[in-house]
Image (cartoon, rainbow, N blue to C red; front, side):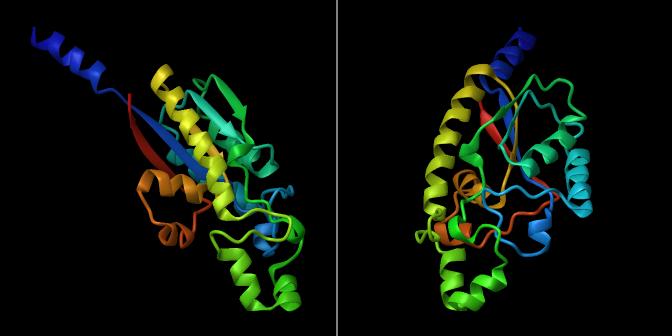
Amino acid sequence: METFLRFLLKILFMKRYIYIFRHGQTYYNKNKVFTGWKDSKLTPRGKKDANKVSKKLKDKHIDLAFQTRLIRSKATLKEIIKFHPECRRIVTDDRIIERSYGEFQGFKHKTIIDKYGAKKFEKWHRSYEVPVPKGESIKQVEKRVNFFIKDILKLIKREKINIAISAHGNSMRPFRRYFEKLTISEMMKLENPWDDYFMYTIEV
């Protein structure tokens, strides 16, 4: 009887997990270039970053993984999935893609500062509501990321699965804000690492 009750409790209070991580360092990251939706490959350090995350996640169970269309997201996830034959499928979903930097994509930070001044640069770079010219604001990124979160929570609860997400620095901000109950100000101060992951527990 006691064993049966424990079994019932296990079913009732089952937990599943989300593992989210940022791609490893890219050449654009290294050279302080606005990347946005442009592709930039992982540097040797970036490959080591991805390897570090893969080792930290080696003993976790991953059923399903998400990536974006960008090379850096795919390359990082590929390194992680090497240790997870149980991962049934990989889904590409650009709701978690990096913030679009519009006209600035492919230009060095210094070039933008020299052209527009440090004050405008900082406003575009770190403001929550102000979009870059022909690009996105963090507020806009948060809107699409929140739609993604809503869908994966339904998926996790329905299928009772663990999910890995190969994301980007700015798409991780609203993700962490949601799960860590952060203010906008706290979210905007986040610096997401290239070589670590964040885990969130979901009651199913």
